[in-house]
Length: 389
Image (cartoon, helix red, strand yellow):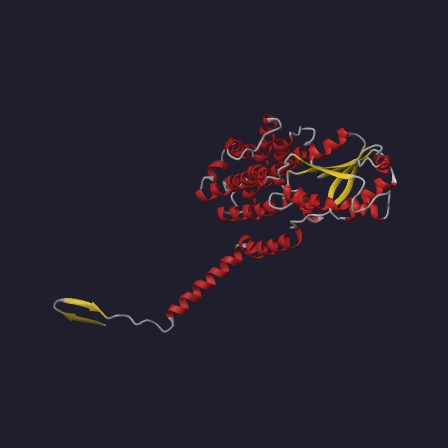
């Protein structure tokens, strides 16, 4: 309906349909729910992340770890020696997993991180106790992780009394005829920064390297440049190496910057080989880049690539030993942690910087990183799409 006046035409205002606002809002709500249903990765994150956090914090995380791997150098097999070892086990902090026969084996196990404690009962120990010489029992602790070592070290004060309850060799249990000499190696002051700063190297590299390459293939698809890439005479291996290698240099610069700040600002030492630290850091960087590239071949867009990276980063930071003691986790959580590159790199970087460990001491973790890198690269090459699906 129109009206004319003063030479102009005016349209009559249209009336708003009843409940139009609610209908449009409802239509938009249904559309978003359908889109969410189709985006399976986002829907999985809604379910998986809170469940994962609950399970990990409820079952896997333990700030007072027990049954810590311990080596024993038993230079004499006597009743008193066995009583002392039994008393150590009864505290539930120590679990004897290795028996060595030389001081060199004893030191190598601590350097490699295979054990967190070492107990040495010297030759002639029981005879010295019976003579009243009050000999010393040595307990060496790997204090690179102060949280893991602290509780167990505090329990040593009652060991002498407990050991003498069922095996009296003379004297008052309240004033035992021997002493336990505890030695916290590699971090005697129990400084938390010596543990955290080297760990930050691996944590920051994991987050950045995953994101860099996780976006690589999906970015090509969303920008429309994948057609040009696929039309070129290039193999999937060449595509992968071409996308990974530039970021190896970026990661190396990041690692150098973090380590330099740790050394000059926080006073973290580098007792081992700097060249070996650089080489193994490069191996770790390449492993994370390969995993990130694998994610980019499995997802369909950049948002899903970021989500996949975060789903991998969460268990990495919780189960690697960065935030919580690795030895205090249940066995199933440790198995998962062994499949994460960050777990092995944390052992490597802390061992080189704080212990001065050699490649022979770190052979297991080096081979584990190389194996994870090869597995990730194999999956990535296999999954690379030669056509746009």
